[in-house]
Length: 284
Image (cartoon, rainbow, N blue to C red):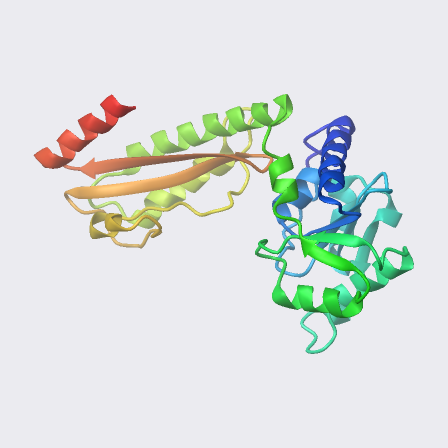
């Protein structure tokens, strides 16, 4: 397991920045379910967001609390460095239960800390803060004031530190190498999935001293008529003798992404495509 990517002082600055924004918005407590925000504030890096989990930030608490599935609690300790009493696992019997829900235990945690009347911010637009999470939170905390935090932490993340920028530059080197690999593989008759396999190899292998991580999205590679829409992936079909290929990939270092998109043409391009390419170069 890799060490935490940032020093404790940087995490402390992030928590302080978040609390100042909370104060401006009148929040006592934040319940964060966006995996990126959880990672940014604590370093939590487990692939477990398909089950309810959260990071809690309270104005009067120095450290956040990680809350998640019991079997993932060890990952919470290993990746965040939080003390054991700040890593709370809920019972496995709550998983996929038809009536009970993990947020019932989160409600119990909030009540035990006497935060049940707090003004609470939740991430209404986060994909993993589900309608059921919200329902159980509202039902269990009738005296709390619960509002949308309006991407409060997302905006706090906007200005990057020098350490973050360094990782993004490194991710840029990885994605540049991967795009070079793709260009070398894009030949008529080569199976599309073989091209993507080589891209994955380069993105994951990275460069000497710069290992690559998984990306938030798989490589997108529409071919031919598929280039009329941007978000198709690949197939096992061979690349055609002539035609457009679009490629969108991202290099990743410690969860920090550098995306890159390029358009290729197999064979001699038609005049209209060549002219458009010249215009794009001039505009750049």
